[in-house]
Amino acid sequence: MIKLEKVEIHKYKSIENTQTFNVGEDITTLVGMNESGKTSILEALAKVNYFDDDEDFIFNTTHDYPRKEVKSLKKTGSDPKAVTCYYKISDDLKKNINEDLGIDIFDISEISYTKKYSNKDSFSGINIDNCKFLELWFEYTKLSVDSAIIDKLKAINLTEDITALVAELKADEEPEKHDDLIESLN
Image 1 (tube, rainbow, N blue to C red):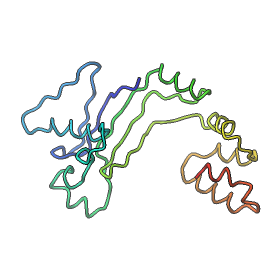
Image 2 (cartoon, rainbow, N blue to C red; image 1 turned 180 degrees about the vertical axis):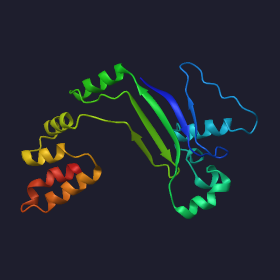
Image 3 (cartoon, rainbow, N blue to C red; image 1 turned 60 degrees about the horizontal axis):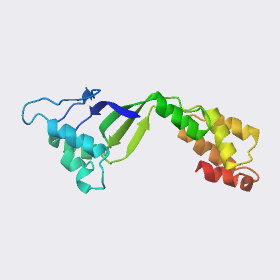
Image 4 (tube, rainbow, N blue to C red; image 1 turned 90 degrees about the horizontal axis):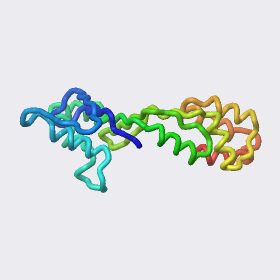
């Protein structure tokens, strides 16, 4: 089971400063005066992951960002965060994921999911044992790779490191011997 535990609404309509609230075990109540942002909170949450493809339920800077800040935001060209949701992953789900993978590499209890005004999204807090993952990946893909390259893959921490390794493999004297690995990394 994945349970929503906390929500941060960064900026949305009348919400000009980040507002954070915890989601209760059974019931969470939003209390406030008229025009205080209760409906805005529910709209923002719906836009994080709406049930259907619906143009009314995607973030739109012009309509959703606090009005008095839209002009200055557009000048900066930045893509601000709209909402971040924090989830707790149950031990049973972790166990099921690891059983499905066939190897014990998934060992996280919390993740966060952020949606920006461009409607691009990202996850944080997802950590796995890279060495175990690579072992499983090479077993699954049946790729034959030099141990030196495997060591370089195990040392990778950033996306930029993958890009650099792909460039290095393409510059090899015999780049065609790395074609399958390059295709997998791209």
